[in-house]
Image (cartoon, rainbow over all chains, first blue to last red; front, side):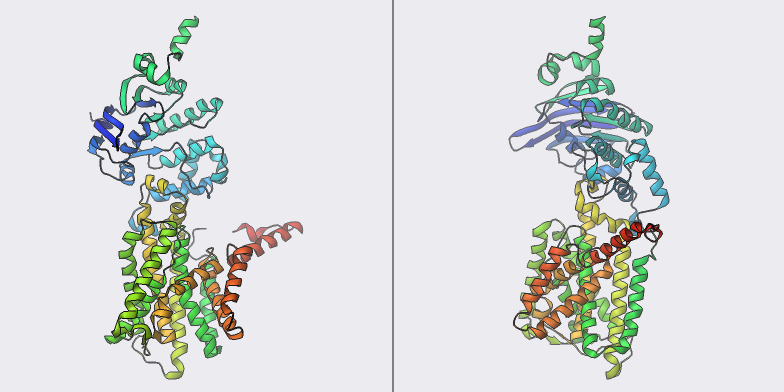
Length: 260
Length: 331
């Protein structure tokens, strides 16, 4: 079976700064990968390289068996590898509905089809279904600029998934969200993505979120992956505890047994 | 909402018929003002298309002048029918926009605006030197045929007006439909967030390039109409950077809400300039500048905002008097 994503010997340096060094990872269909690491560890650089935003200095990136090195983000997107953003990238002056219909309009473009009206009843129905899937239908007619942060995050991800991607990379989906809202938000996102059989990778700083939603963890440190292991194992890894999550962090599954 | 035959379409169609009827009544000087308004209106629609993408060009006289000089050059080689001249002007202006677009689509904001101006100044410099096109004196445009027919001397200007009105109508309706299409509405998306457009799978630069070519073609149409109207082309009145400024002026005056408003804006500009020049030849620039200042201060969205203002007031009045807002609900 081919992997969804296979990265070999990925390198990136900005002048003298090494942002990625010998990154070797694979992702299989249906997995949920959590990317952890301190600021500047190379997490977003990795996402930027895989989605074509930054050219790697060396190495290979294969998506569904084909190389995506040298492609533009739009080409990678069309193949079915999409991403969301730490800072939601939406059309601020428009309503939620108009944001979504624009997203569908662009995603479903076909040559001369671009000259047809954007608003069709079928497309509007797809927009409403997507808004419902991400539970933001109540904000349908609100301006994107007036949305609470959590809703805007959901809108960003809803727009990123209009193509039903095979693999989606979420860049810090819960950053800027209050602690109480984080789990509810991730529940909505993960449920929506599973409905579409999308393989998920996300960057996350909150280890409770990682433990709850992630199968496998990649821990980044100074441009390298210092640990690639199932979540429970990674939480106990010495290097991960020293360089990423801190010694004082107690994984939930251990805490439970300690209290017993 | 998605119908092609919407209110703007009918408004433009009504406008066309009104112009065709008025043509029988107009004095020649009024017709001349009308022709110039139609010409500049076409160019300003091109600017509107760019404006909605968040781009301003201070150099669209480049394409305007290209269209106008194409008429002169085609006449030199013996092509003299209005349709061929129009197609020629559109093709050369559009072709130039296509080529320059590969460079310009990489720039935004002030760089985009001034790079356009730079190119228009280069064309100005070239035309001022080319002797076969009359250098700074320019070159005369002779009377054209209409689908092979020659109009009598009394009928020539009215016929020209009919053709110009139809050209402008097609340009306006086509642009209006374009702006409602997925690609046209993408202007907003590109203006708001190019990264998102890219990550939805479309090239923002390509979208800008297409718009740029469209605006170049529209400016070419304007140039052809102007050349035939004035009967003379020269670098100062066709390509100089102040000519580009006129188009920006009209776009601000009209607002970017509707293509129909652009022609009203062009007409108001033409009247303003004509009368300011006639009644205050010493200070006509002062009057034009003052008018621009007033528009920007009190009608930042242009003349078109008067209509929305009027409509919201009417809605408010209707609501106060307890009437239903049926008339507005359909909007």
